[in-house]
Length: 125
Image (cartoon, rainbow, N blue to C red; front, side):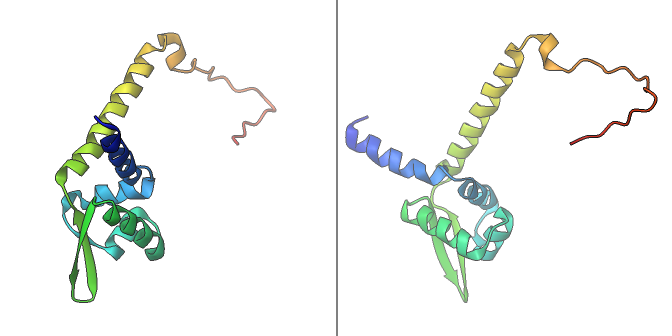
């Protein structure tokens, strides 16, 4: 990949660099959504979701369509969703491999004695 292409790809990857934007991608897997639907899915304000949508649209990840008073967003190319899924799957595999490499004795805490001590009270922080 030449330098110019690497720069373009790196710029586009900023679309994936925020959890709210990943929530947006996940919500759009099932089709176009309104701004308010996306804000609800991402559990954020309309103002905040609008800022993320603008970034994603400016980078070419999303397209919008006005229907009456509402704007609906959808993913510009399904490969962008596939990218999210591939990264997620790779992370899961990596984490599983790390867990599998931990010696068995370290994977689970030792069983605690079930006997009660008199006069002591357990508290949890």
